[in-house]
Structure formats: C-alpha cells, structure tokens
Image (cartoon, rainbow, N blue to C red; front, side, top):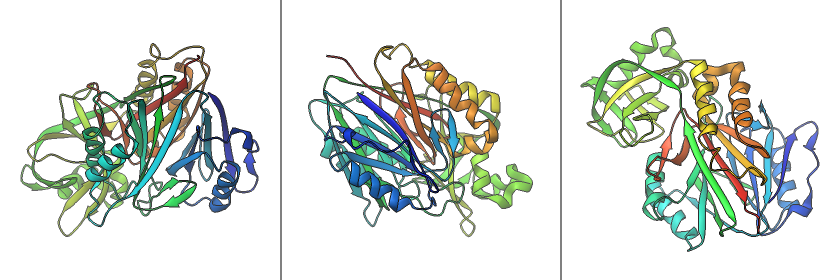
Length: 381
C-alpha cells in the first residue's frame, strides 16, 4: 500500500502538493473537511481533477486530525493506493422518512461480495439515526465482518452536516467504501473513558432516538436539573453529560449516547442513536485523564493484530464531546494513539457526532463519546 497525507490550507493550498501518480481504481481518498472552510469547492475540484479514477469519500467535521495535531478550518486527506486489493464505493440518499436501517441494508447489499474484507461508512450526522444505520448494515453482512466509520459533524453548531462522495459534497446521505481481497488487512477498536454518576433511571417513554421521560419525569427537565447554570447552553452543553445505557454486549457494559437536539414543547431530547424503552440509564461526566487513557487503551488493544512491517493508515474518529472536555489537551489523546500503535503508521481523522465500530461480539454498532480507530494495511505477497 502506498500512502500519502495532505492538508489544504485556504491561504496556502495543498501541503505537500498533490501527486496525481497515486490515482487508480484501487485508490481511496479519505477527506475530512471543516464545515465552513474557505475555498472548499476548489479543494474538492483539485481532488476530482488529480484522482479521477479514485474513490473519494469524506465528511464535515468538528476538527481535523492530521498526524499528531488537531486542526480547524482545513481539509485533511489520506490517499491510500492498494497494490493487490480492489475497492468499490457507493452513496445512498436517505428517503423522506429517513429510514436509516433500510439505507444501511441497501449499502451493504450494493457492496457485498465473497471477497469483501470490510466496510468504511460515513453518514450525514444530523440526518441519520446511527443505531438504525448500524443495524441495517449488520443485517446484510456476514457476522464479524469489520464495519467502521462515523457521523459527520458541524463543530458544536448542530446546524448542517454533509458527506463527500465522488469528490462532491452531498446532504442527507450515507457513503461507504468496500475493500476486497485477501491482501487487505483491517483492524478496529474503540474505548471511552467517561464516568457514570447519579441514580439509575428507567426509560419510561422513548421512540427510536427520541427520549421523552425517565422515571415518568420529562427527560429535558431532568437534564436541565443536572446541567444547572449550563442548562441554557443546550444542546451543546449536553455533550458534556452523555447518557449511559446498561448493555451487557459492550466492553464496559454500557452504550453511550450523545445529545443532538432538544424539543422544548415536548420536553424531549434527540440522541445520535436509539434509546430503548424500558432500559436503565445513568448520566455520565468526564475526567480528562481517563479520556486520554481510553484513547491509549483503544490503540493498545490493536497492537497484537497489526503487522509491524507493513505501512499502515489509521483513521481516528473521536467524539465532539471529548473535544469539548479535553480542550487544549486534545493533542494528548491524538499523541497517545500514534505513540501506542506500532510503526510505520500514519494518522488522520476527525471529531464526530458519533462513531461506528464493532462490539466485542463483532457486530457493528453506533458509539458516542469514544475514540474509535480503524487501521488499514496491505499484506505483502
């Protein structure tokens, strides 16, 4: 696998310059772009011109990861040219009813093949129910097939998100890359690092990813109680207090869900994934050191899987809530990943509204408030 990393800076252009020699039908160009970066269309036009045969996919972000640095207002890309594997990509628009499960199933069916090694999926973060998307993908794929990726973000604005497919910016859509052939290696892992607090409460009314009541009390009113003086900052402040759902399938026994929006009239909260009615939940809060330890653990859990000789690309997708908590210490969680993964490995990624990664059982699911890692490499013939 040949690999190159680049950044587009609005006032300087591409650094380093793009190399069109990387173009081929077996080339993937992963693009992570600030939602309001100047000259974005110029940057995407450059990619289409230099890599007409490649699979160009990406999304909007809440911060771009480039090597050991976190940046804003850039376009960050990784170009991976596979020598012995093949690639395929597709993009589907969500229907009027935003049926994410059907979209996930259709994506998986479109890319299914006997030699499929894994899927990398990116979705419009404000348009899709990530839990339903993951269920649809899992329903149409062999058990244990690696499926990872994330939801697009818009900083802490929650106004508009989008994906990139074929080098074009697209709304209300999900894009996916399929990787094929025995030569291609894929490894995935995730960790959180949040602490639970307060009493456990029952979800007494929820529909899909919309939570109405906890212990028969309005959900939004309870959240406001815990947020105190920061209640007026919802929904952004809710990123600092995700919800933990009791779940025996998760590594730490919890599924974490992040707030995407609120409804004052109905006193409800919309989350990035489903909140099962009848489940038991607790509030969560962050400890900065624990979050950084979580990133280290995510990388450490992959080290025995990874070949120490081959060139590797790691795509790190971390949640916007982690960024808000860590602040200037975000670079520490990024450094923890790159310092723990075996060399040679190069790192790109972004901060998201949700992360897709396999559970311990191998089934893909939506995660929130995690550091999720996907490593690609190519075994030598």
